[in-house]
Length: 117
Image (cartoon, rainbow, N blue to C red; front, side, top):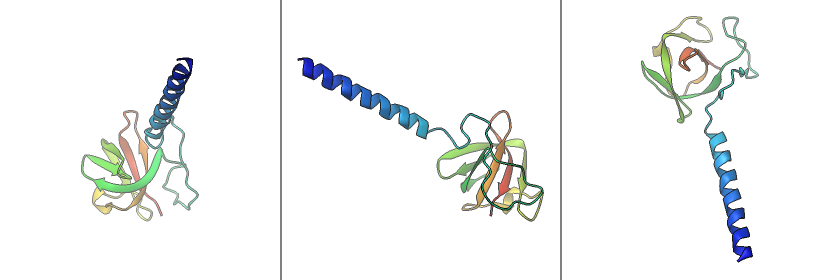
């Protein structure tokens, strides 16, 4: 009887650990902290010091961008698009498969979308 209780406690501990790890894996790029990511790449002067996140566009619409098939971020009404050679661009210049960096506003909406090399 005592052995059975120990087995169930061990099983419960493993399930709890698994749930914690799963929860950590589901945190979106950039997490909840405002730490900026700065990939080791050359960037033009009109680019920021870092990004809230980076990834590959899997879908882009006038309302949102889907990054890495996992993260759907709405666009701010004040969204600005930036290409490596063009400081101010348009959404039509971005497409699926483009590597991008992005900055959020306080509402976790994409305020700036940057083309990455």
